[in-house]
Image 1 (cartoon, one colour):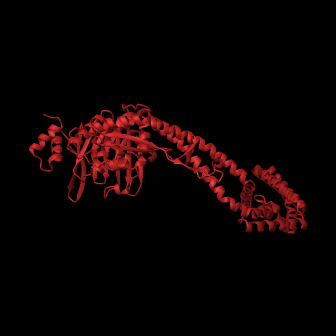
Image 2 (cartoon, one colour):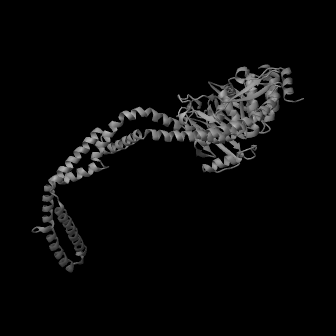
Length: 591
């Protein structure tokens, strides 16, 4: 459950610190007072994206912090308990687990957003995972999703806990589509390959005749440089060798003479001992260098034939570079690519057969998983229908009918003249084979799921999107949420005006449903109906205050008498009458 909420410098809110309770927490307030701002702020703790627009004018940053009590969360009927799920998430991301979880978002006016979990910086993705485990937030316009039939399959899958099955199916379905895309690309390349086969053959022959190697150009240029400068190398190394070792009065002879004189000096004064060693070291260095110069000089090659061969080779490499990419690496890469294309052209039918066989195999696996998912959905239909009908009855649709229709769209493959699809070659990418028939598939499987509704006795059910009024859609959504809550046992449910389109007796029924539902998760609900507000376990009022030139929104927990007055306002308007106060007490169950 959400234990406390702290909001600072967020939109119209200067600072709010509020403690929530278990059960049904109701928030009321006049239109424009800022009720939905609270929901928007809460959504930040659930991993929603933030905008700098939310930072209160003149402030550096906005802060939203929530303290959630994780221990004692309602246990789901199936799956991992919430406390274990949160502990596992924290452990995977190297955070310490505890009975309380502190989640904080900071949004800077400069555009920076920071997230914290238990006062430790955290990625936004972790907040999203934590939010999904702890909270089900139903915004003002979410009930409109029921009017989009493509969302109905999601509700059915949530009810049946088919998430893992769906993920398994989607994985192989995406792989099937990728294989089909590869085959299409291959087909599209067929004519191009035929046309370019001769060109590729010529280019391969031209490149192979030279057979360039990686970094060969640098090696040739290095060898060429030495061959072209052979005379200069020989002359200079000979001069150096004579100066250092072999010539008259060479450096080596002079160092030997100096060494003898230093030994005489060292015999008189030990101060020259280091100098004796340094001269001997110099002698060794000169000897080594002289040896290197002599060996190098002896190896110098005067080879005009080799020089010509290298120049010819370099010319061929330069020509290849100009034609095929500007570098030897590009030439070698081009040879590799055209080699593969040529091989494909040579063995096109074989390659096509391989990928067609892979598609057949993948389609078979995908079909099997789609069929398994479909069977599970069909099994779940009666259960969800029964549960929602019971909830609708409690919400004032006593004679209602609710049904879930599942249909599959058959596909007739465009067969060739022979009347048979050759190796599934003419089967659409998104078609799956169940038995001897093909069905259209999507990422959700082969099932088209649609909710049907009738709210009047004697009337046949019709597509919910076509027959439901705004109030009925709200009640169907609440029935769905109640049904899902009983299996999910999410610790906190938030409803932003779930009472849209209802009033009077129906509003009372919606309130009773929320009250009953709040026995499982904690509920925070924004409402404008006194019938719902009167059933609150804890009641908060959102108020807009003008202080000088600034407008501020605040949230206040109401005492019992303040609740009576607030509900009376909802019933009779700004001018609260004695009759309104009496009616408010009756709604609250007070004598």
